[in-house]
Length: 163
Image (cartoon, rainbow, N blue to C red):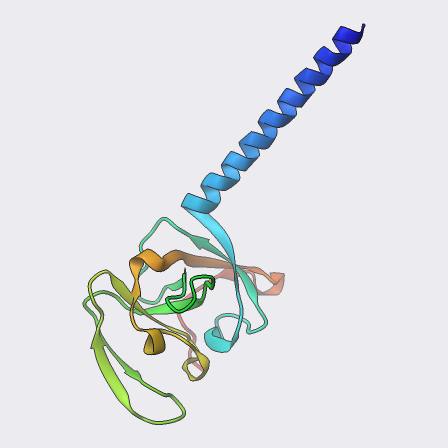
């Protein structure tokens, strides 16, 4: 009688353990190789993203193209994952205003090989490539596909909107 109790308990524990291992493996592979959720906040991506924050879904599979919104590891602080729009790809010539709202000084740069130029949609309040320069492809964590939270903003991330 006692041995059958322990046998049943052992079988249930093994089933539960295998289930937990499968779920963990699925989540690990999904978030590290396919897609992951990210929290984007701050005024730099107004009107595309809300300044108080959006949870977005980013995919890791495709290489970003011009106009895509990306999540990347900050060149200034590796613990931060800012969200910006790709304005220029390697080899592109990008012209930008150095201090929008402060002065009209503009510069032009050719994006080096293996890098992208990123800018916030609201350039008057954005720390982006105008400050820290081109971003290496290796720092890009993913391309943003969808806003998933808050639910009233649920939907795909599209091209920049003009106001």
